[in-house]
Amino acid sequence: LSVDYFMDWLFNSKVGIAAEFGTGDADAQSLYEGNTAGNYTQFTPITGGGGGMIFSTGISNIVTGNVNYSIKPFEWLPVPFIQNMQVVAAYMPFFRIVDGPTAVSGISPDFTGNYLGSEIDLTMNIRPLSDLGVIAQIGYFIPNATAFAGSSMESPTFMAKLNASISF
Image 1 (spheres, rainbow, N blue to C red):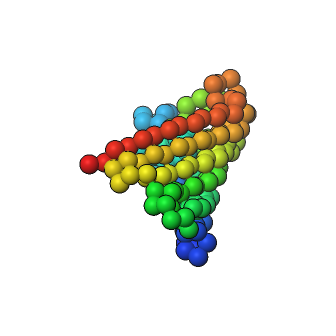
Image 2 (cartoon, rainbow, N blue to C red; image 1 turned 90 degrees about the vertical axis):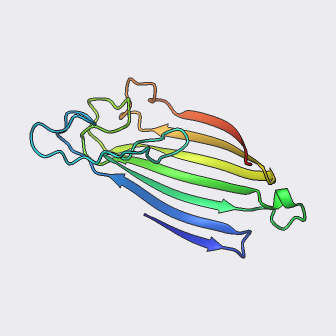
Image 3 (spheres, one colour; image 1 turned 180 degrees about the vertical axis):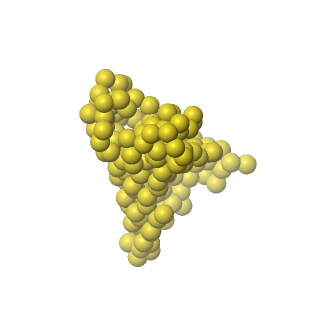
């Protein structure tokens, strides 16, 4: 579910808010094995889920929010490849729906809360040539340290990525 508001008068900027969720099952044995105490009610997707650049979850027993803003800050310049540069900032909080299994590894078995953490991403897209695209991203994931106690996800994580693509 998403709602976007496009403002062409402000450097073709866009404000958006979105949410994804997949149901959970509090007494399921695992993410894929089902439930021995009743009906298995956990959603199990057949494709990869959403999430951020760092904390990319499967959509199973999770709610993910996304608040984002994008802008083309140099569209007024008479240089074609700079005109189409786009910058996107996004904030994503992650919540577990019930205490059952999730597609997220590293959650402490003693954790009984719902909030898993938040991620902030910044992306810059540019296509300097018709056949060449470049994407630069930075992301910062701030975990709920209680949720990931004792795992490698317990501390905040920073990531930077550069991607180039060629189209024919």
